[in-house]
Length: 253
Ligand code: 0WD
Image (cartoon, rainbow, N blue to C red; front, side, top):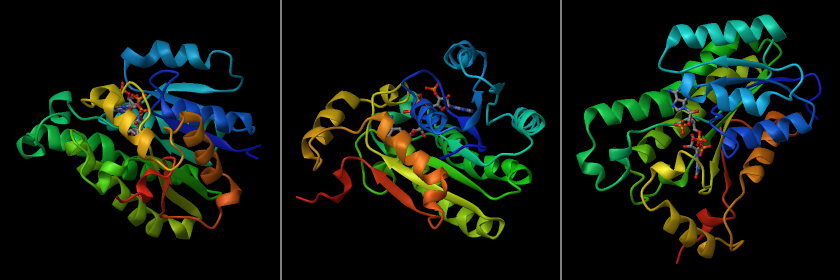
């Protein structure tokens, strides 16, 4: 399905990362991929995970470092000559902002969460534009806390709301270039980032019971939806937020 397509994957921290599930789904369908990692801390993990992959590229890219972002795109452009799709699967907020009341969020935590979790989407889309000369597809990861209050999710919910709005504005800007932009609103999954949210364990239990499918979603299911969105099967879809949450979001009382 993705033969001759080149993708750039942001947000692999380890094998549990949603970005890694997306990468596996896309590679199974023939995509060639470039991976970025945030800082030396994660370099070894990503290099180990990607060691067996033929024809790949692994480059550092911390989104708070613009020269590093530019260098990452230049390296991918040089190796592959183009980018067909981009998976944006990164977010961050200081741990102390992910518990207690939203009311007391510091200016610093608010701005950090917004910069890394929301601004990075238009930032990376702009950097990708010169390389998406045959059109393209951009997919980002959101969460239900963007639209409803989820205890402890706090400033990350506000950042996800900005991310979903950014998805729509980018879709409007980039449609004329044949570039589609969509978000996946994933149900809770036990990953490194998720462990930063207080009481994640009980949230998983609650959601798994209440969701129509009576379970939590798997990272591979999010990966397969990302595959669909970057493939030509989704050629008429842009600006959407698609739920991959075992149906949790449709439930009322
Ligand atoms: O329940 C979940 N796990 C859900 C996650 C439900 C719904 C949405 N999401 C979202 C997250 O908010 C995030 O946007 O999915 C995305 C991926 O999250 P993940 O796979 O759950 O978490 P993880 O494996 O930790 O990947 C996120 C990565 C970072 O990992 P750590 O844990 O080291 O912070 O985002 C990257 C980093 O690799 N990241 C950055 N990348 C570039 N520059 C930066 C940065 N400044 N900061 C974090």
